[in-house]
Length: 97
Image (cartoon, rainbow, N blue to C red):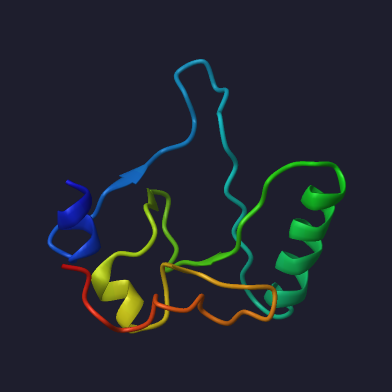
C-alpha cells in the first residue's frame, strides 16, 4: 500500500478525528498570505512547548493524504520542507521505485 501511495497509483490518507472526537495528532492548514510566516510561528510555538512539529507543503482537502505521493510531488506539494521552505534533499522529482 505504501509503494502504491509513493508511486501515485493510490492515495492513502487519514482522518485524524477518532469516534470519541479525540485525536492523536493535529494537522494545521495555513492558507493565504502570510501563510509561510504563520506556519513558522506555529512550528516555533510547538518546539517551545516540546511538541514535535513538521512542515509539509500539501495540496489541501479534508482527507489528510500521507506525504510524498508521486503526482503532488511533481508540483512541489506533499513534501517535507525545512524552515526556509526548501524541499529536503532527495525528495524532488525522481520516482520512488
